[in-house]
Length: 138
Image (cartoon, rainbow, N blue to C red; front, side, top):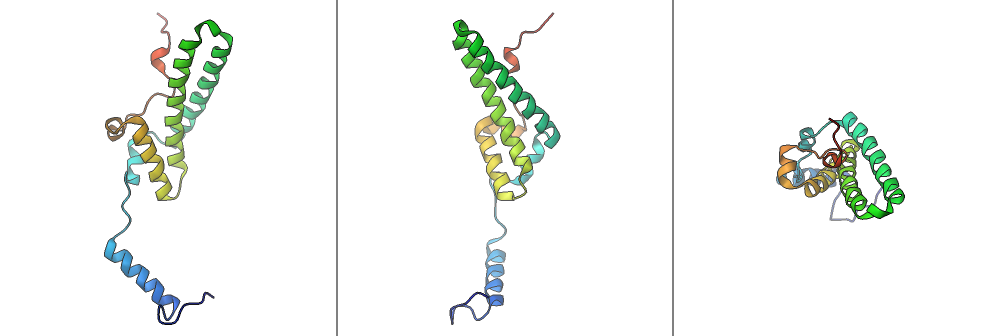
């Protein structure tokens, strides 16, 4: 049983009542961004699939850098873009997997800073890989 200093709280109930009074006076914690922002983005299953694809794509580009040294600059640019896409999807997956609201909001804030405020507010997620680099077959 914790020991309370005389005069500060006469019992643990007094401390709980004080904490509840402070919470009522100040209101519930306000998070920026709010946890409801998670609903703007793809769900947990799509995040898992996108994270797997993004991870495989980054590994493939890393192998291309090693196998094609005479075009290393182009492959490095591609690798930076692929890692950016992967990081965005990993952050969203981590936001989905957190049960603690504060941590979820921290991941959402990171995602907002990474994607940009306009894309974040619109719920626009980047593709899991830089598709603008893919060659399209006719």
